[in-house]
Length: 65
View 1 (spheres, rainbow, N blue to C red):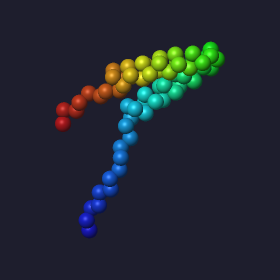
View 2: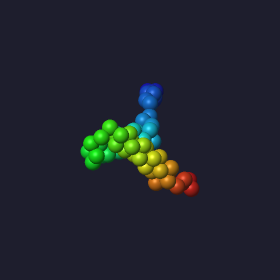
View 3: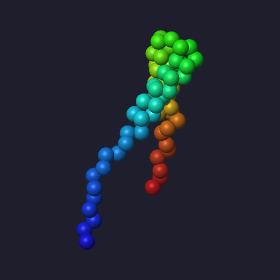
View 4: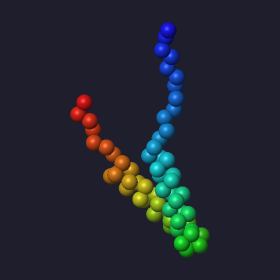
């Protein structure tokens, strides 16, 4: 029998983390202040924190093998 390889698209984890950071930043900020500007500010802060997470905490060390 032949081994059949099915093509499947992989999930881009970094973009999902950015999306979650923006959404939860906006939601938490809106829950705290209840203004429209807090939604925008919270989304920006969530995006910055998600970018920092992706660049410094998420990367793993390369394996030696």
